[in-house]
Image (cartoon, rainbow, N blue to C red; front, side, top):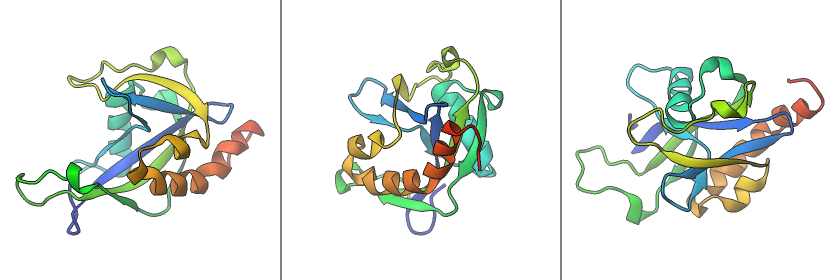
Length: 165
């Protein structure tokens, strides 16, 4: 779904472990890394979208994770002009409008899989330190990643103290 301003409605997913590390996923056949994310389909709630994308992109089901938090507001990023797909039927998507979910992995890492859809989004992953993605994400996503990680940081680091907000 694309809103009236040209932004595709989307959810972002941050999966953390008990050491406050986050799952960093490598785009399929590219040397590009990011958090899982995906578009909201007509009639879906944000949580429905998050669980659908979680399964499609990293093979995890609702019982494999615990929702710790979600961002309070929509964040946006614009695509660079060379990535905007012109010539497609209107409306043209100029970027993403996202709400983010912070999840805790509560299953074995072996349940993380990339073969749950016809065209996998990712082909590798690793645990990285919580702030690592800000320094390594593509430049046009840097501001939203920083904003989201700052907003959700209190929930993540409370895991290390053995509790959640």
